[in-house]
Image (cartoon, rainbow over all chains, first blue to last red; front, side):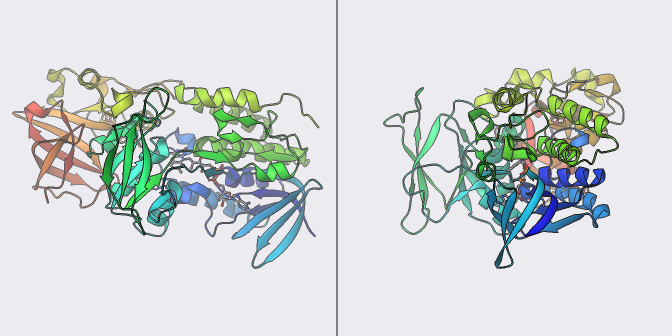
Amino acid sequence: MIEKELVIVGAGPAGLCAARIAAEAGCRVLLIDRSPLLGGQLIKQTHKFFGSEQQRAKTRGFRIAEALVADLKPFGDTVEIWQEATVVGAYPDSVLTVWTNGEYRKIHFQSLILAVGAGERSLAFENNDLPGVYGAGAVQTLMNVYGVLPGKEVVMIGSGNIGLIVCYQLIQAGAVVKALVEAAPKIGGYKVHASKLRRLGVPILTRTTVVRALGDSAVKGVVLSGLDENWNPIPGTESEIACDAVCVAVGLSPLYQLAWMLGAEIPYVGELGGMVPLLDENRQTTVSGVFAAGDASGVEEASSAMVGGRLAGLHAARFLGHLHPDHTAIDTECRAQLSSLRGGPFGAKIRAGLKKAEVKVHAR
Amino acid sequence: MLDKTGVPTPDQVLSRFPAEKDLLRPKAILECYEDIPCNPCSTNCPFQAIVIGEDINAQPRLIVERCTGCGLCVAVCPGLAIMTAALKNDRAVFQIPYELLPLPQTGEEWVGLDREGRPLGPARIEKVVRKADRTNVVTVSLEARHLYAFATVRCPR
Ligand SMILES: Cc1cc2nc3c(=O)[nH]c(=O)nc-3n(C[C@H](O)[C@H](O)[C@H](O)COP(=O)(O)OP(=O)(O)OC[C@H]3O[C@@H](n4cnc5c(N)ncnc54)[C@H](O)[C@@H]3O)c2cc1C
Ligand code: SF4
Ligand code: SF4
C-alpha cells in the first residue's frame, strides 16, 4: 500500500489548478491521469477560449494546458505526477486501485479530489456502428492531437458549443462540413460560433435529426428527417446527404463512477449533465475528505473548471491542516469569479442545477 | 432568426454600425449579439473604446469617438465576431480575422462573402498581418455598396 496525503484524479484544467493551489498551501500531492498528455480536454482545443483574462480568455485551449502544467514546475518536489495511470477502483476505506505500467497499485489517501471530467453521450440511430460515425472527442483527438483528418465530407449532429467549434476546426483542417443538424428548434451554443460557420457557407438545420447512416462497410451518407413540436419525425421530410463521416456532438455526462464507488451521494441533476456528487459549499462530497471539481461535478466550461479546481484544492488543503496563507482572499475571489461566469443566460441552467446538487450542511 | 440560423437580421447588423459619416476612419463593428461570459475585446482595447462593464455577460458596446480603428480587437475576439469597417471613396474597407489556409496575399483578388456565405463580388486584398497566435488580420476592400453585407472572403481557386 502506497500512502499519499492528497490524491487528485484527473489532470484537466480542474485537477491541474487544484494541484497548484494545494501545493502552495503545503500539501504533498499525487496527480494521476490516464492520458499520456496533461491537460484533459484542453489538449485538443485549438480555438481561443472565452471568459475573462483571469481565466486566460483569448488563449487557445492547448496553450492554456501548457501554462497550467508550467505553473506546477516550481512544485516539482511536492507534486508527483503519474501519467498513463488509470484509477480503476475506489473503496470506502480511502483506497484507490490504479492500473499503470502493466500492474495494479494500491494507494491509501487522506484526502481526494475527483477531477475526472465528463464522458461523451452517444445517439441511437440505424447504422450508428458503421466506421465513419465518430464522437466529437474522437474527431478532435484525431485531427488536433495526431494530425489525422477523420473525413473529407462531414455531417455534424448537435449544435452545442462543441458541435459548432468542431465544425469550424474541421473546416480549418480542410474538410467540408455538409450540414450541421440540430433536433431542438434553436441553436444550442454561442451564436458567434454559429455565425462563423454560416459565413463559410455551412447550412444549420434546426428541428432536424439523423435517421440512419448509409453504407455497407463505411459511411457513404446520412438520411435526415424534420421533427415536429413533439420531437417526432415528420413523414415525407426525409432527405439524404452524401458524406464520409458523421460526427456526433450531443453532450457530455459527468463521470460519477469513482464517487459512487466511494459511497458518495449522487443524485441525478439533468441541468448538470446527469449523475453528480452532492457537494457542500466547499466542494466536499458527502464522504468526508473527498472533493470534486470541474466537469465531474457538473458539465460546464474550462473557465469554471479552473476556478472550481482552485476552490477544491484550497479546501482539501484546509481539511488536511494546511491553511493556505491567502486562504480567505482566494476563497472570496474564486466564488466571485464563479458567480460572474455563471451570471448570464447561458449560466441559468447551471445555476438551477447547482441548487439541487449542493448540500448546506456536511451530511456525514 | 439568429437563434435558428446563426445569421443576424439586417436590423441587428445595422445597429452595430456607426453613422456613415463616422466611417471615414475605420471603426470596430461588434457583432456579438448575445449575453455570453466573455470580455477580452473590452480589456484589450488600448483606447477603452469597448464597454462591457461589471457584468462579464453583458454585450460589448462601442464608444465610437474613442475607437481609432486600430484593429487590435479584431485579432483578440475568440468569437471572431469583430471587424473594422471604413468608407474610402467608392470602396468599403474592412479588417477581418482570418484563420484558414491558404492565407491571402496582398494584391490578390478573392471572393467577398455575405453572412450566409453567398458570394457578393470581387474583394481586393489590401494588406495581410500575420499574428503570432494565428488569428491573422486581413485588410480587404469591396465596392462600397457591400458595406453592410460583407462578412468574409473565400479563396478564388
Ligand atoms: C470541443 C470543445 C470545446 C470547448 N470549448 C471551451 C471553451 O471555449 N471555453 C471553455 O471554458 N471550455 C470549453 N470546453 C470545455 C472544457 O474543455 C471542459 O469543461 C474542461 O476541460 C473540463 O475540465 P475538467 O478538468 O473538469 O475535465 P477534463 O478536461 O475532461 O479532464 C479530466 C481528466 O481526467 C482524466 N481521467 C478521467 N478518468 C480517469 C481515471 N479513472 N483515472 C485517471 N485519469 C482519469 C482524463 O484523462 C482527463 O485528462 C470545450 C470542450 C470541448 C470538448
Ligand atoms: S479597433 Fe482598436 S480602438 Fe477600436 S475598439 Fe478595436 S481595439 Fe479599440
Ligand atoms: S471578445 Fe468577442 S465574443 Fe467576447 S464579448 Fe467581445 S465581441 Fe463578444
